Amino acid sequence: MRSTNRLARYYERWGRDVIRYLIKRQSPPRHLITHQLIAMAIAVVVVGPVVWFITDRTPPFVRLHGTLDPPVVERGGSVRVRYVTTKHARPDSDCPGTVQQEIVDSSGTTYSKRARAAAPAQWEDDPDDPQQEILIGQLVQIPVGTQPGPASFRSASFRHCNWLQEKWPLYYWPIVQIGPDIPFVITCRTDVETEILLDGKRQCVPKGTRQ
Image (cartoon, rainbow, N blue to C red; front, side, top):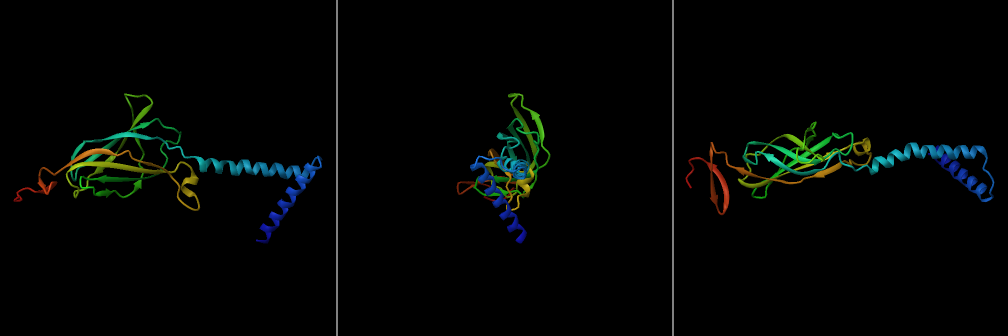
């Protein structure tokens, strides 16, 4: 603490000396100029990159819209998501991070998938637009307990493209992208279930169940 206070008093006195010489329209001594140049170099080398890291909020790419393959799936089945995205905006396009996925069924119930590390992306060229690309995601399993009918799929990604976004000492500050939502349809498992309408809602019941 004493050394810190001593250093602060030194630079305060050094600043006053420089100002006094400037007011008198005299050239400050060489050691004051040297100290000033050192301070400027520290600001450029240390403060500059930190400011750039803090203001760096450019995502690697932006998801524009997507589809699920297949668009109609039995509950308990799997789908693969395909997003149309903008072209990569930065060289470190596959910035590491995590992905959180959600499925909302026809009853409004949300099924959240456990957050996982973002896998290396698979890409295809978009034949309809050279300024866009197609991101091919991993297989996603539809929970068995979902209700049949219209549903939506949502993915949120939390990526860190520089060390400050991941190692910030006070909090985790990633680049976040949420959505867009992808509509699809969930059906009953046709091999063991039958779909019925109960109280105006679509339900799946085991085959052979009396209605």
